[in-house]
Image (cartoon, rainbow, N blue to C red; front, top):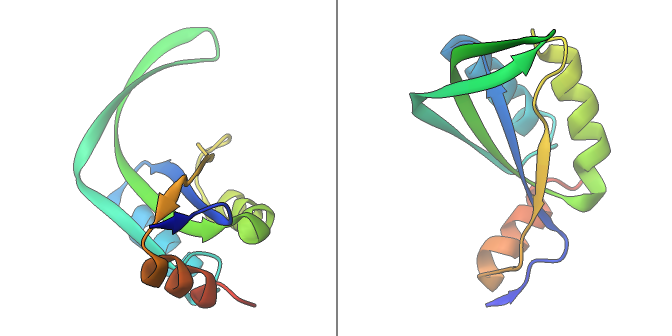
Length: 110
């Protein structure tokens, strides 16, 4: 295990599987994410929006990227996403396998 200080895991929810697949493919093709996992089973989200408590079934994306690519990834997610305010939560990676982290970093180099 090595430090994952450059690596980030980004969570994004989408309204449909088609949107999730479109965004995931675009992020990998643009080298903004090394890999995007699409959680096939819908997640149930309960949230406050415009003063009301809402409920929705959504598709969760888990995107693997680097700190250096976060701003560009966020811009592209916002551009492609159907939501007014898409979820974009970046989590730090404490550690990971040397090989995987090296692959991740190489995969998102511009």
